[in-house]
Amino acid sequence: PIKGVIFDLDGVLTDTAEYHYRAWQRLADEEGLVFNREANEELRGVSRRDSLLKIIGTKKYSEEKFQEMMDRKNRYYVESIENISPTDLLPGAMDLLKELRSSGIKVALGSASKNARPVVEKLGIGEYIEVIADGFSVQEPKPAPDLFLFAAQELGLEPGECIVVEDAGAGVEAALAAGMRAVGLGPVERVGEATVVLLSLEGVNWQDLQASLNSLVL
Ligand code: BG6
Ligand code: MG
Image (cartoon, rainbow, N blue to C red; front, side, top):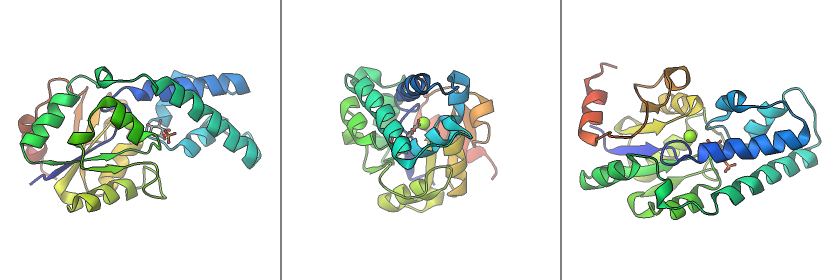
C-alpha cells in the first residue's frame, strides 16, 4: 500500500517554475547567452549549478564568474518570490494535501531548490508537510534518486511505499530510479515516463489517484 507522497515543489504545488525561468532568462540576456522558453524545458527540476552549465553550453567561465552568475540568478529569483502567498498554490494542490492528511498518508517535499523552505512558508502549507528534503539535503541532484530516498527515509517509509509527484523529466527519472511510482504532471513529451500522467492536480482526488496507481501491473 502507498503510505507516503513526496511532492516536488516548483511546477507542482506552485508555479515558481515560471519564476526560475524568468530569472535565468534575465541572466542569459545580460550575458548574451542564447536561451529561451523552449530551452528552459530542459532545466525543470535541474539544480542551480547544472542549470547554468546547460545554459552556457560550451562556453568557459572562471569559477568565480560562474558563482557570480548563479548568485545573480538567485537574487532575481528571490526577488520574484518575495510576494507569493497561499493564492499562488496551483489548482487542486491544497485539496489534495488536505485529503492526504485526513487519509493518514504521510507527506514530504522533495525539491532540488535551496529556496524551498521560504516558499513553503509563504504558501502556508507547512502544517501539511512532515518532511522537507531540499537543495541542502543531499549531494547528488535529480535525476539521481538520492533526494527522494532521503525523503522516504525521513518519513520512515520504504521507497516502494512512496509515490512521487513531479513536473520534470529529471524528477520522474529520479523517482523511478528510487524504486517509487511517479505521477507526472504535464505533457507526455516531458513526463511521459511516469507511471501515471496528468495535466495538473486540478480535480485530482486521492481515492482515484491511488486506484489508478494500484491498477497498473508493474
Ligand atoms: C528546482 C527547480 O525545484 O530547483 C529548478 O525546478 C531549480 O528550476 C532548482 O534550478 C534549484 O533551485 P534553487 O532555488 O536552489 O536555485
Ligand atoms: Mg518541478
